[in-house]
Each structure stands twice: as structure tokens, then as C-alpha cells.
Image 1 (cartoon, rainbow, N blue to C red):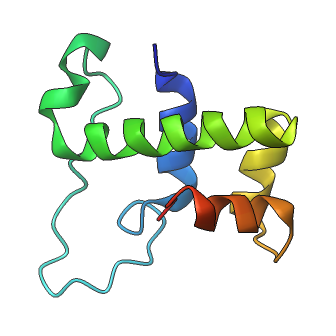
Image 2 (image 1 turned 180 degrees about the vertical axis):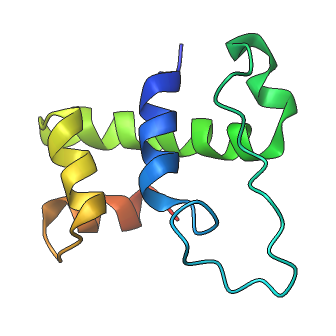
Length: 93
């Protein structure tokens, strides 16, 4: 089962609407719902997207033998390193 907590952490770091980096003309609200029951996440496009990213993150974490926190820190402060290269290989975008 995919880790909804990891998906939520990734959302909180990466969502342009929630981090104030959205350049959308209509500035709509983020569709990610932290209170949604995990069984319904696949029916919410935003939640499903971040679940997919969490799955890719889990694969990267296992492949590189790093912790979730190391992965999340790399999202907060990106740099070209093994994690960055693995993210590209796994289509983390």
C-alpha cells in the first residue's frame, strides 16, 4: 500500500498552489484533500497524482538506501546528486 503520509509530505513541499508558486491566472484552490479517506484518494486527481509520486519516491528511497527524510530534504533543497538522477530515471515530475 502506498504511504499517504509520504504523499502528503510531497504535496506540502511541491504543490505550487499551496507553496505560493502558482502562476495560474485564475488562482483556484488546490484540489488535494488531506482529510479524504485513503480508499478514495484514487478518485481525486490531485491526491492520486501525489500517490503516484509517493510510489516513485518509495522506489527511489529503496533503490538508493536512503530515508524518507533524506528524500524530502532533497525536495526542499534540490541539488544535482544521486537522488536527483534517480528522480529523473523514475519520471518524478
